Image 1 (tube, rainbow, N blue to C red):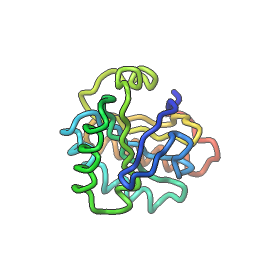
Image 2 (tube, one colour):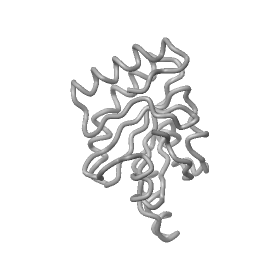
Image 3 (cartoon, rainbow, N blue to C red):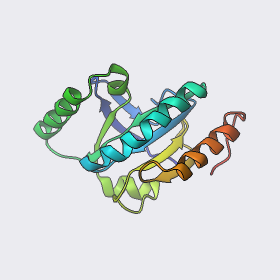
Image 4 (cartoon, rainbow, N blue to C red):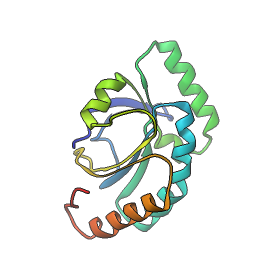
Length: 159
């Protein structure tokens, strides 16, 4: 699977085009679709921060994925998120995507919006790992196994 070219702005108001603007050699990407999904993202953050310190070249991102709508809606939502996230690094790595969610999910073969998706992609958009839902010990083990294997190689194997 290849991550599609999409545009958004991070919470520092910097316009970004993904996947090319991802900063990591590999990027751990959390994709929530609903406000309540934030608790699922939050359940992974301690591990994401730990992995980012452990593996040089890894950067994690949150990509709140919302329906494309009016300018006022986007402004209010972005300002609300900014107000709730004081950490500059978190703001830099939270990139809000306003787009056709159905098309986006289809391009990534994400069957539903019932839970978050966790992807590992490179700057070209190649996907190497996928998980779904809140943190679990099994999910952590799979992610650690992937990074233990792939960060030793220039071209990590897909899942």
